[in-house]
Image (tube, rainbow, N blue to C red):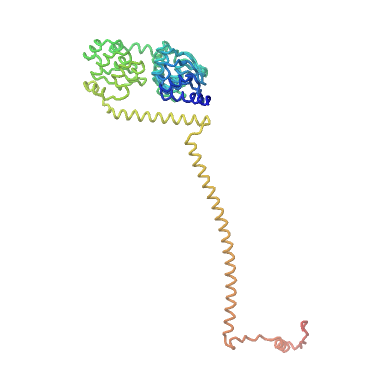
Length: 458
């Protein structure tokens, strides 16, 4: 009986953590349940792993939990939190002293897990706490390889921005000789490829980039609001002027977190939907550099109508005809759907090449099996009908023979009836000349006498 209670506690302690039931968890710990007990599932999760998975760390924070316990993949709770984007749990674990550089069986630290799953907030937090992005995993990949391979452009931009030697990051090769760009091309991540192409262009055309000077952009980058006002109000520069990289003053201010400069630009009608050569808008730049205040002013990802209202103040500077926000959102959504459909087709092809079978394959096989079954049934029916037809043809031949016999019998019967109904004179046949008369005629003509011989039958 005691063993069954212990087993029951071992099972339910993980359920208590998953449901964030702090009171029940405390009662179970007081009864002697271990907070480091390994679950009996395939992942070998401890309560801490379940807490990181379900964002319910508060249930374990005060129960002497081991923050560096590992599952069957040698992952700690940091890896699980990063994989599922639970930044609050991640921050709590880091404050509790979790090992930030611990690697799993793939050689991935928590930062690499964030890059692979596209968790930009977790990646920024880990880098702030000292996470490394230039270590290599078991296959020689750095974090930039993983982000480019999975097409996580914001994470890739952040990784490039925090590395001092950008070209070393772009030129890093794994054990198969692939760079981040070659992996992005291999898996058809066009956004990452375009971004990396733009970075390579900047490297190859450094002199051209240096010769193109934009004083207003430099002032916005440095947060010099007075200089920006002077240049714009005097008509020296257009408020939406773009530099050699396609960036506007709003891009510069948003990336560096100069909130006053950005607010003034928005009040003057600066456009926030202009994209750079690498496809980034002002919101993308603010998000990449973690400038949350600027991102909030720009409206985040929720609604662009407030920015449009601020932009109406100076319509003379934006004479280009632009589509309505709803039409732009519809266009972006359509483009995203096309990209996802293309990626889905590629993933299905890769899955089939690896020997996998999708639901569509199963459905197609079921349809083919049903069609083949129907064909077999129709073939059996056809053979039966052929045999039936041959039998009917044989019966028809027999009937024809019987008809011919009956016709012959009918004609003979008709002849008999006709001969019976004729008068005697009509029925009397002509007399053929007898042999005696023939002899006499021959004797007269020849003068010879013919003697009658006895027949054999007589």
